[in-house]
Length: 181
Ligand code: IMP
Ligand code: MG
Image 1 (spheres, helix red, strand yellow):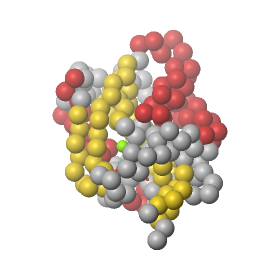
Image 2: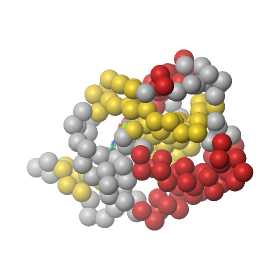
Image 3: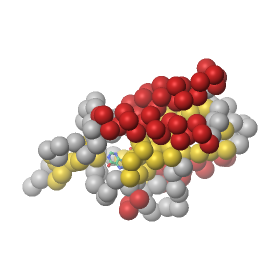
Image 4: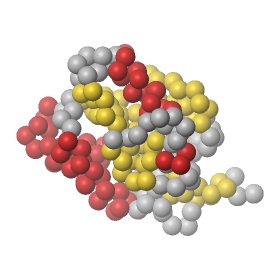
């Protein structure tokens, strides 16, 4: 059994402020064509990030495109099943495009690395990655996200789109899940 931490690990306000600075960091160095977002975990981050990106991009904002893929590797457990399933990539014309790949969290890194490989195989010219959260301690494969919202410790977190067995996604803050007996 799991229960939520007493206080949020990262509050909605902290997220809002960081998303704004993060978009300025992205826009300063990367003129992407398409933002690709990995459902389901990144849906809330993506909505906020894209609105802030538009503010930072000014005149370039109307031409930016968005596409969604569905990546899943977790079952109803806090440990990755290790098998990556990706749906929806075939509908995106990647050839010659600069991609900003957005996900909720880089944990072992398997998902992000797997997606990046597929994007390049599909003909993307350049792929850079953006994650709201990074758990560096848990990394098992060689990938470094280009843009990171927050570095976090090796804890299982929920809220702001992130789930445990599909619960907790609507919560505006990010919470730690703690194991109970
Ligand atoms: P990775 O392939 O091990 O890096 O796992 C990436 C995916 O696992 C993320 O896109 C999340 O969906 C999920 N995940 C990893 N850590 C957490 C967590 O702490 N809370 C919720 N989901 C997580
Ligand atoms: Mg996910």
